[in-house]
Amino acid sequence: MVEIITAHSGSDGLTPNSVQFLEKASQWPVAALEIDVRWDKEQQQLLLGHDQVFTGGLTLKKAFAAFSRSNEQKLLNCDLKEPNLAAHVVALAGTYGLEQRLVLTGELNASEQQRWPGLVWRNIETLLPQSSFERMLKDKYFFKKVLLEAVDEGCVWLNLPFQLLHPVNLALLKATNLKLSVWTAGDVSEIKALLDCGVDNVTTVAASAYYEFLRGMKQLE
Image (cartoon, rainbow, N blue to C red; front, side):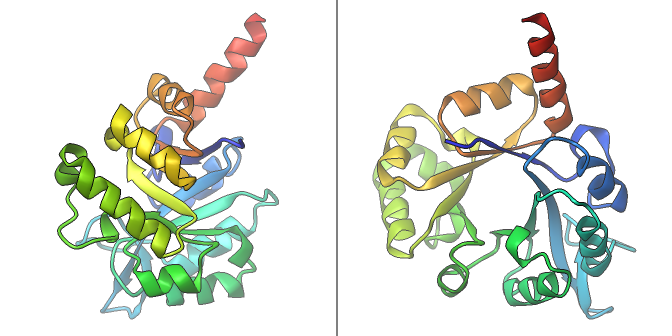
């Protein structure tokens, strides 16, 4: 299994959703970077921003331009904070030659899953109505229903908060053979624990720190 580490936007103290983050984190030995994408009604274009209200956000055009200058074959995870953005993001990525380096998470639906099965890492909460994290954590029968829906919709990847990985849910997840992407690890110990669970991707705010830890361990050998 190939383990993927994704640098969460703003990882290791960088400015979230910024050119600084894209340029600096692109130099780290991570496999992917994450940014948050929204539609700005006033400017009629895609901007980067985690929260609903933001001012002067970086445009996705500029973000793609900055990321495309990297010679690395890293992935760029666009976390869609609103529905119906996927087609716009995919089309724009194509103009920068990034269609093969794109990952989509966040607000996605079944039709978008079927249209771009290789790009979508499906957020678990989007699969069924009334699908709260608390319910999935406490009700294993509902959790199994969610997983069956993921399989029926043709999901390849499932994106979920690591708090859902208690032993019962983890066993159910592994039985599906879905690739597992989990968020958001806060430090090196959490990253290690999640990788030990056998997940395929860990999104973390301590990406650089993790690789500094690995480098230190190698020097001690």
